[in-house]
Structures are given as structure tokens and as C-alpha cells.
Figure 1 (spheres, rainbow, N blue to C red):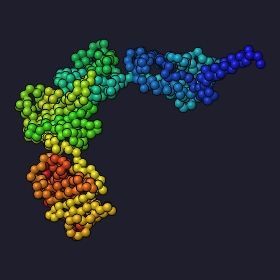
Figure 2 (figure 1 turned 180 degrees about the horizontal axis):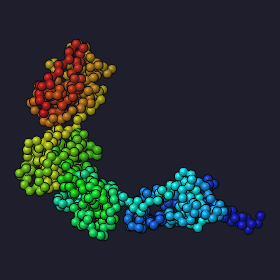
Figure 3 (figure 1 turned 90 degrees about the vertical axis):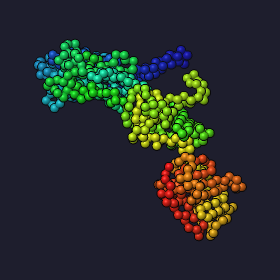
Figure 4 (figure 1 turned 30 degrees about the vertical axis):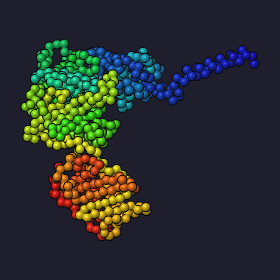
Length: 607
């Protein structure tokens, strides 16, 4: 075969493959062709940008812009997008039940009039890519829920379902959007509320709302959200008039109040003015929407906006702490010194005690307690007289800071406080308090002070010992007498001091408790009430074969709740040991011994 012939064949093959790839693959398959042939029209709803409905004398013109539908005639207003989307969905699914051919129609001159298709009152015209000719709607057929339609200038007609007719056979106002605004609550970041008592401005920063006018304060996110939702979810009851005429009959020439919602980069906002009550509909109220340029009625409940006061939308939480940037907590209590807690990854340390491990669960409890605390009373909005409330020299102050170890472009190295809480005088069941970055003086529960640990020793980690039971080699238990034992090579225990045989199960139980002992809570510095000078039980043990690593647990008086005060040499201060642990440590280590009697719960008060 000559090379020219080969080249020609290759070119032909390439053309065939290109045709198949670029043309035939875009053609509908057999099933799709069959489906499309059964449709009254074949459209893509996304490409339809205009709808004109002629319904008798009414001409309804709907146009799409920025994916939103608007009425252009007989009035200009927002259209009900869901209603129009349902119409387009009905058009896509509209099927031919039967076709009346041109021959059948021509056989009888009055056939079109019989079907109501010669001069129909209802017509539908679609605009956009792939839009069909105007659709004419005729009479209902003898078959239930069926009717006749044809296209403009077409010689054939179709028997179809009535779903599309029901979707368009409406008055113009039925196509109007009954939602007051197309804003959703998440889009609103500023609100201006004008009520008879004055003007209020609310502003959203990050995820929280603040009151900007008439005072600077944290806002109640939930209540402000509810206030905005009253507008964004409001449903129009009646379309009354456009707002270019006399507004006096509606009480809107001098409205009783207004609320304006602003979205990001919106400097004008969408204003809703509230007017008077209609004489014939006492459960409604006249309103004017500046964005839509009309007077409507809404349910009377919208009047509640006019009663809104700053305290109604004010955040009653004592403090808002940004835990994402929180690195240090400083607790300064008069007469008890200063406690500095520092974050170390997911845990906390006591910075003021050489970064000893802190009780991270207690830190989280403190944060939760403070952030959930509700203000009992707002005392003053301007903190001008601090001595009056004992806030010039507070009895307790907590400072929250971020911490940078190195200088950066944004921050300097060191501690950067971002808020603090000061507690002043106690009055009855409350205590005066002030958050440093806010100008207010408030009252909170006095009992809150009892929930804030002010002694550095109380912040210690609850883990007392962290060994494995098999690491303990020698053991001595002292009550009114001493029993001591040593671990032998076969891991059995031998009695060194005491009477009777060794009780191996009880020894193992004691080791299991002792090796991983945890405190219930730290009390603080030791006091005579803790009974550690005359202990009820002392346990000494070693955790090395040469007995150099020695440890001692001293258990003193009982607490009011049946637990016990305790101390270990490794830690400063007194902690509370749980009742089950205490009872386990009192088990007799010899077979002839008797259990140590439990101390009376009333032997010493709980600190």
C-alpha cells in the first residue's frame, strides 16, 4: 500500500473518532430520546431567565437576576423563588398523555374552540436558551385532572396533566415573596434599633455580639439572634400599598420605631418601620419595608421589638474568656500570695512553684465556672467609685494572659494580659466584681469565691504516687503498733516485724492502692485540725532494691464526709484521701491482726 493511501486512511479514521467523541457522545441515548419525546417541553431550568404569564387581563412578568426572581409587572417586588422553582420543576416533568394531530384538528373546523385553544385566556411564555414557543392553555378534558394545550402557531395539540396550569393560574400578588427580607440571620452583622426610649446599636465581632449604643457592653448572642430572627423569618400577612403615597393612615409618616439590619459591606441596610394597628385586623400591624418600597401588615407580635431595652439583650455572663489565646492564669488573693498557672500544650503547670504539674481538670473547672457565672445585678455602668465597692483594693483578682516566648511582628515576648476579674466587698449573699476591660460594676454570688482556689498548694496535680506495685520492695505500716515486710526473690512477702503470718492478698491490695494513689482534692497548708501531728496511720515504703528511694504517707484526722487528711514527703501541703483508698490501706497485713477501726467522721472538720 502506498504511503499516501495510508495517510488518507489515518486522516479518515481520525475524523470518525473525533466525530464520535465530540458529537455523538453529547447526543442523548435511546432511553433519553424516548423520555424527551414524551415531554411537553424540554428545558434546563438554569437557562430560563424570564417568565410571562397572561391570565385574562393580568400580565405577570417575572425575571431572574443574580439567581433571584423578581416581579417586573404589574408591580415591581421580590418574587417567591420557591414557587417559581416549583413551576420550573413541573415544566421539566410535564408529560404528554396524548397528541391530537393537525389532521384531526383540521377535520373539524371548531375543534380548537372546542378545546378552548383558539383564544385562550391563560398563556405562558418562557425566555432563555432552549425556551419553547408560547404555550396556550385550553379547557379541561373529560378525563380527570387532564386538559388541552398547544404551542403558538402549532397545528397539533396535547392532552396533559393540570399541574402547570395550577402553578400559574394565580393572581399577581400570589407570586410576591411573603418573606419580609431575603437576608438570613447568619448574614446580619449589625443592627440599629430605634424605639420610643432611644436608639440602640448592636454589632457582631467574630462570633459574638456587642452593644455599641447607648452603652458599650457584651451582648447576649441568643437574645440578639432571636431579635433578628423576628425580622428575617417574618411572613407578610397583607400587601397594602406602595410607600410613595400618604403614609399617615398607616401610622408610618412618623413610625413608632424601626429596626435596620446590615450585612457585610452594606452601608444602607434594610429598614423595617413599625406603624399603627389596622382597625379591622387588630392582630396585625402596619409596617414599611424600605428595601422593598411597600406597606404591609405583619403579625402584631413584631411590636415586641419596640419594648426592647439594652438590659434585655445584654450578656449576663460575668466574663467572656478567649481560651484559644489563653496561656496563663494569675490568681492574687490578699494575704495568700500569688498563684501563676501556665499552659503546657494540653496540660497546666504551677509556674509559681517551679512549673510543678497542676491539676488540669481543676483549671478547666475554674474556666467553666467563671464563664457560666451569671451577673446577679448590674450595679453601675461607669466604674467611677471603686473604693465604695472595695474594688480599689480587691480581695481577689484573676488575670488571664497570653504568653509569647519570643518577639514577633505581632507581639512582644512575655505575658500579655487580655482580661481580669476583681472581687471587692461582700454584701449579703453577693460580692461586688468588675471585669477589667469593661467599665461596669456588677454583683455576683458570694459563694463563687469559695469555688476559686487561692492557695498555690491547692492547684497541685491529684496524682500522689505513680509507680507499679511490683516496684515497691519494702513496706512498713504503723498504727498503734508497727508491721513491716519485705519482698523476697520469689515476689512473695516476708514479715520482718509483727506477729503472725503475712496476709499476701491484703499486702497486694495495699500495694495496688499505694502505687497509684490519687488525692480527692488538695486542702492547702497543714493545720492542727488535719491531725497530722498524731496520725492514725503511717505507711513507709521503698521503690529500689537498695532501699534508697524511700517514701512516706501520713494519714491524720477524718474529714466530715468520712474521708481523711493526708500528707506525703514529696509534696507540700495536705490532701484528702478517698474513703475506699483509706479502708484498703487499713487492711491487716498479718493473719492474726485485726482491722484498724475507722476514724469517726466528726473527728475533724472539712477545711
